[in-house]
Image (cartoon, rainbow, N blue to C red; front, side):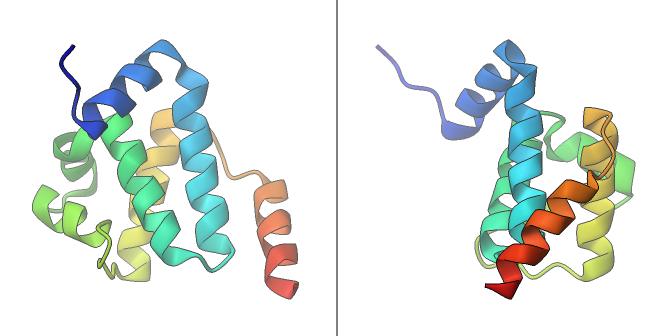
Length: 112
């Protein structure tokens, strides 16, 4: 049985279960607000692969897709404005707004 590349597997799961993509996005935001920026960036990258893809993210942000991929890579270091622009587009894609509970949970984890 042939195997799918990881990003194609993510997309297939997200297509079958729309809540899956939402959970990836929520986990990414929680990780970022908790100070786990490496994890947050990689989760955002997984979210993009599972949903709109980098070409569409590029179109919506006006930024080159290769730069966006690099920003969300393991060694990426996006500026705060680029990171929040990516998050904004992802949230619009999901049709969600930032739940204050996410920030409160992340903030309490920082205090530990």
